[in-house]
Image 1 (cartoon, rainbow, N blue to C red):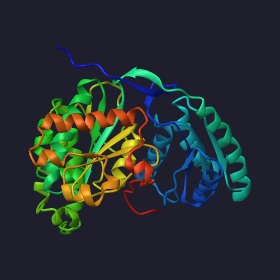
Image 2: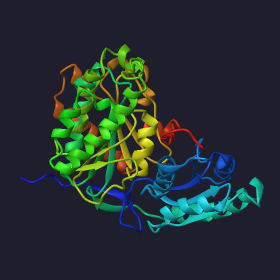
Image 3: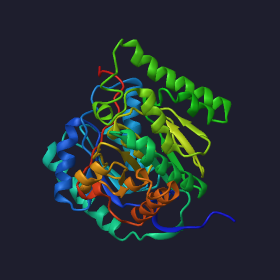
Image 4: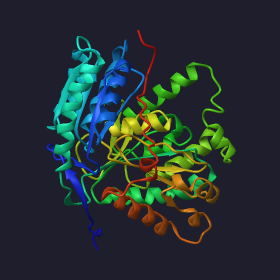
Length: 389
C-alpha cells in the first residue's frame, strides 16, 4: 500500500513555491532604517516590519550573509510582496533584486535625500496597495508535497531526547515521504553525534562537505580556548538533566527521523529544488538565529521541540512548540501547541505522538495560528559572523 494522500490549502507564488501565510514585509536594509520600517507597519495594517541591528560596515562573507538573509526573508513563500527601505538605495536595490527574482512585487525607498517622514509616506502608500492586493489572494487546494519545513529544539532536557524529539522525527519522516523538504542544523550541537549524522549522508562529496563545515565551526570554538559548559549545554539544558554536549546531541538527532540526508548547505548556499529532501544547514544553535536562516532559505513552517520551555517565534513563519515535559506543558501552557507528555508516561506510543504533531501541523498549514504567532513572538536574528569594519 502506498502513502496516504493529503491535501491542504496554500498560496501558490509566481515561482511555483507554496506559502501558508500571506504577509507584506517591510524590510529595513540597515539599523538606521528600522524606525522608518516600523513607522510604515504602524500605519498600514497587514504589514510586518522586520527590524534588526545590523547592515552597516559589514564586509565579505558576513555582508553576503546579511544580503542572503534579508533577500531570502522577502522571497519566502509566506510573503506576498515586500517594501525595502535603506539609508541609501544601492544596498536596498541589491536586497530587492534578490526578492524580485521570485516574481513577487517589491519596491525600494531610500532615506537619504528624503528623511524619515517622506520615506514613511511614500512607502506606506505603496504598502497600502500591496496589502489590498494580498487580501485578494486565495488559498488553493494542493497535495501536501513540495513544501519546505524546518526543525530545531531549544531549552532541551531529558524529555526532549526521550519523547518530543523522536515524535517529531516520526512527523519528519512522514513529511519527507510525502515529497516535502525538511531542514535541520545546530552545527555545534551535533558534537558527539556528528559521526552518526555523517553516516546518513550517502553522497561522498556531500559527506565531505558536511565534515568540512562541522570541523570549521567547532574548530573555531576550540581555537578560542573557552569552556562551553553553560553555553553548550545551556544552563537550561543542565537544569533539565543534560550534563554533556554528547548527551544533548544524541537526543537532538532523534528529531531527524530515519531518512538519508541528501542535501548539505553552508550559510550562503541556496536550497536546491527537489522533493523528499532532508537537508543539513550550517546554523548556530541559537533558536532565533537558526529559525531566521531557515526562513531565509524558504522554510514556511517550523517544528520546535522544547523541554524546559522556549518561547521563540518568527515574523513570517509559524513556529509550532512541542513538549513532552508535563511541568512545562502546565506552567507554560500558553506557549505549547502540541503536548506529547503522555508518550513519556507510556500512555501512547511513538506513532500516536508523531501523528499528533503531524495533524497539528496540517492545521497550521491550513491557517491555524500557533501560540507564538498569537503571542506576537516575532524574533528575527540574522547571524553575524565577525566584527564590522
